[in-house]
Length: 126
Image 1 (spheres, rainbow, N blue to C red):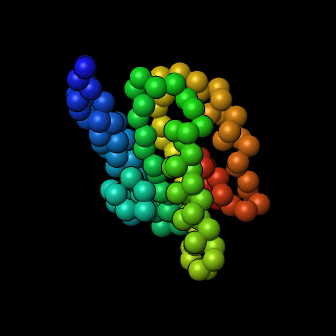
Image 2 (cartoon, one colour):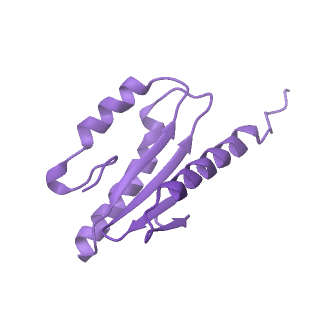
Image 3 (tube, rainbow, N blue to C red):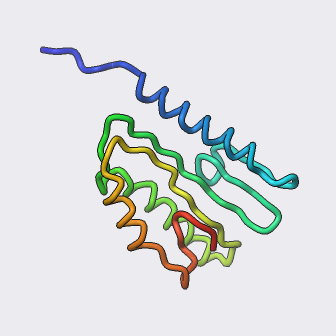
């Protein structure tokens, strides 16, 4: 019986990816803005007139599949639905994700679910 791969290399690479994106957000934040790590999502960016919740995923050796984006998109939809139901401030959501291959399919699914009228846009501002 072979031993399963117990290397944490890919997990650590994912943390580096999230860390790098967080640093990028810090460098781009407005003077009066704020960054929160592990708040609503992995990285939340608060500015005077907007909030963006960013989910960061890193799949180094994995090609795109709907299963990989399903959970983060559903979590964003649930948060959006809860905010609308409770009358809370609506926010923007960004899924910042890396795949080995298959981006064309991912771009198609993003276009299909973006709906400006209901203000749920996965990458972009309401």
